[in-house]
Length: 222
Image (tube, rainbow, N blue to C red; front, side):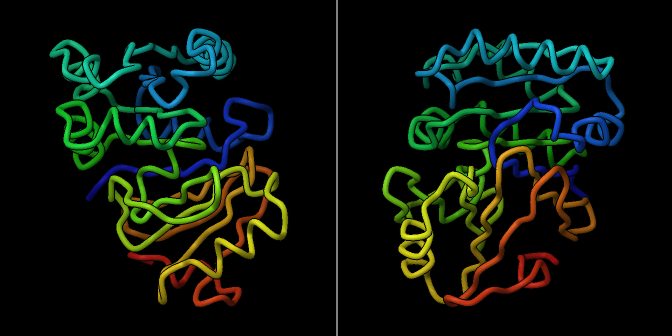
């Protein structure tokens, strides 16, 4: 069995993210490894500091693995740090950059191996988007290739900030049969180790398939 997976809509490490306390418990650890590559263009140092403050409030420690570029993801020390983690967090707002950093890299292999070995894996914003395949190019709402940790699923992060017109376009562009989930900020679409899905946090996820509203039962592995 894998570890728990949390696809967070954004707005991570804020008061509404009540699921983080549970994720720490499920990880069985008091340390969270933060990989800020998806935040490379948005003051990653500030992002890491927010993580440190948030998890300190929860009685845990956030540790940065300083990966911002593809070259950073080849550093053996960074790869080993992620592989041995029990809770890995991928924040950010740039899914295209995060994909470029992680795709076919030793660091991504280490993330997957840790998760398959029972570690908790959380991706927020870009991190949630890129772990799926296909993934949504949030710049315009079209679809592109993701990393595929969760194949046959796509998410719209920061769903609460999207206009109805942009949502409609993305729903219309979705391949037939593909579950597409709108995940608001401070909300997590959580996959338990047994393959079941549930929602945590302050918002409600909206599931679409073939242009119509569906429910979590259509998600892969559910």
